[in-house]
Image (tube, rainbow, N blue to C red):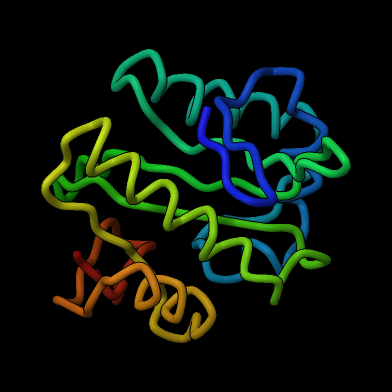
Length: 165
């Protein structure tokens, strides 16, 4: 578990499916992710199983649930993920719109970067972002990353900007 001033970051569990669904069913939240909003709670549950829960088993790390300390509610996620297409560890974050503009992405990303470098011993962490996603670009810059190059992960995910520390 990683703790910040306002958040607890912990591994997802299947009990988080409703919150994970609320987060990724919102078209505004997934606008720059290359994925469609979840259509059902069942789809969110399957995505939890096939993404973060699988990553924990296979890699020992993955995206983490961001829990607001004052309410105990899941308000987003932030964490590291291995991206096989580029053989890099990516930092990613996503928050409910009601929590945008409060600095939570930066707060959680800074904590995850420290954890990745310190506890995990990672020399390099990257951030992949659609260039139009100015909010996410600002967060990457605030945590010390700079634009390095453009990458295409899949035929559907092209023109991503890769930032690195």
